[in-house]
Amino acid sequence: MKIKNDLLLRAARGEATERTPVWLMRQAGRILPEYRAVRNKLSGFIELAQTPELAAEVTLQPVDLLEVDAAIIFSDILVIPEAMGLPYEMVEKRGPHFPKTIQTEADLNQIYIARPEESLSYVIDAIKIVKKALNGRVPLIGFAGAPWTIFAYMIEGGGSKTFSKAKAMLYSNPSLSHKLLQMITDSTIKYLRAQVEAGADLIQVFDSWAGILSPAQYEAFSIPYLRQIADAIDTVPKTIFAKDAHYALPSLSQLTYDTIGLDWTMDPQKSRDIVGPNKTLQGNLDPCALYADDETITKLTHEMLDNFGNHRYIANLGHGVYPDISPDKVKHFINVVKEYSSKQ
Ligand code: CP3
Image: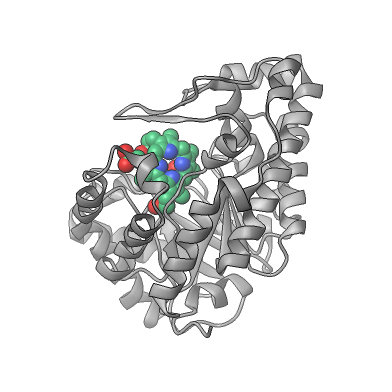
């Protein structure tokens, strides 16, 4: 189906756009009271994510209410460990928790490569419903976690400031680490292919914990698997967002991702110099900037748009929007991007 507002796809492919496309990481499910209303009818996040009609409804909310230039399917990166045999719980106000983790070869033998057509059919069904409801209004983004970030949760068992158990595994048992990373990669490729087949127009890979590895570790334990994913998905544009990984920009720009996401600690012009003219950049306003007054948000957004320029650029925050940001501030940010960039 022809997409009416295809600014995001054109920007990702390096084509000209009348204005800069804008969407927000974590736009579905964090800030909107309308999300809370749907979520409160159920036992929690997991039930919502596994109910395709409702997952579709909350995916569409930001498109209707915030008028972003893309929808991102409502799910989580942690559905992959679950589909590999390692279920998670979402503990209210504390985040994800894995009752079982991977520590030994014996643990590895208990898990398997995911079969998304079976265990992740709820995401695939939600994508189909969203595509129908969007009726080509804006593109739909599919996503998955990067193998290193998923590995980190599977070893650690939950969130952590340091992910020291996961990092310890890389140093103490590189062979087990590579085996698990390969299983995650194989699962992720199947999952992303299924999302594309169901209608995802672009995919984004989140390497949220890229920043805690050394450059050498990132080369050994993340880049090869990100490369496999990029090479396997070749029918839609792809984005890699590796948070806090300044050191990895040269390597990331050698992969076949069309777009590289930047967090707010990365300088737009320096990043452009490193990645060269043939990639699209996405980002990178500090999510905390949206706590400021409208005038300050306007000024910071103008600066961001000036620094990135209007070619090969997708406006976004430098990480997910924080849960207590007012939707009005988010709307203001989106409107400023639209207005200012159409005159750039
Ligand atoms: O972008 C979107 O809005 C689509 C949905 C989406 C969710 N998680 C829904 C969610 C996406 C793209 C994600 C990605 C995700 N999940 C990442 C990568 C991006 C990043 O922020 O770095 C990571 C690391 C996770 C893991 C995760 N899921 C954590 C740490 C938590 C708890 C804290 C938090 O972020 O809210 C989650 C829970 C989660 N994932 C919620 C939602 C809407 C909140 C659950 C609830 O409603 O209580």
